[in-house]
Image (cartoon, rainbow, N blue to C red; front, side):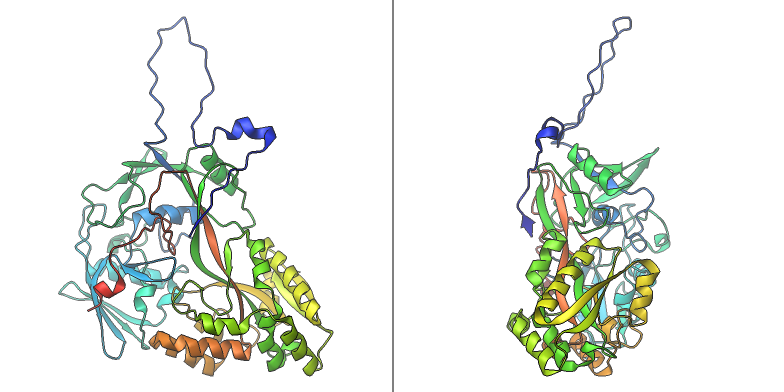
Length: 504
């Protein structure tokens, strides 16, 4: 979603910031004792485009988690599919695909694509890339149900699963690189640009005779990369015109605000902010109190804790996705009387409760304080317990809380298994539940079952979703066109092909 641009120039620095979007040089006196040399003309800002990058993070898509480098990578790499901001899959390197009747075998036919090195894409490259992704912290969890990855002699790729899956393409926006480059720090990709190293500098050059007619958000022969070691350096590179697009997390501890003129979009992240309950002890061992919790929190007031880059969610999915049922969500809105009555009926009015929060995340601490205030108004005496580092992790793992304010990056199909599967990554406070996990698998098999899953989760109070967060994308005015930032793809634009065009 595109947001309104901001121009914020303070009186004391007006002259300085008026240079935003332009490169500047200090005036020099001519040397009258030596022949003057013709100086190269500075690049015209209308003809150049710059991006920041972290030189220590590299560009391996399976290892790098640095946000600014992943923005660059969205120009270097492509997946079988891309994921839009509304969590829809669009075919990219996948030309067509078919699914077996039991929804456990997918067969993919590939586009006639080439890497920026000139080498043709093969099924073996895709297979090696998916195997590397399965072993990575970035993508590993989303491929846990993929039991087999098999390139075929006819050039197709076959994926077999251990459970029926209706929406597997939503998980396959994973960047594809050559089979022998999955461990390299700068592997080749099939994207519209390639990475060029020259001395101590890096740049991106447009791939000549690029294989795809996928519409591009930018059209520059060369993109200049500028090293930036901190968020303030990233911001400064942008404000003084050395870079033209930045993806940032406005709620990050190290975030610094942008103060010049820009165009602004928000970018989907899949990051869910939620409340988890301790089902084993304390006031939330009472099922009626747990299920009423959703009515005790003013979600809209929490959006300000994230500088506006979030959306209220009353179900554990993005309101922008097809899995989110608005009619169902309307049943779980703010109604403090319901939560207050639940406390009174359980004999728990004015009971104390501990709300655990990660102190290394200032935005989350601020949100926790607002939530505690809401709950206090309803008659639950909530106290925020701010822990940092290992202390927070220990308290979470040992259940030293009545409530905790957590966040998790869910897969693009909003699989809730990490909460309810035994040993799941988000299984805290005795949340694992075999019945609910079975509902998770049923939802993977048929998206129509998300309604039953979400209803069961919300009615039992197993999870209280609050917000779906987004990132901010800042761009110099007029240098990008048709930009529709997608999940993990800042430079996403509208593709003319839909998923139905590729399914056979």
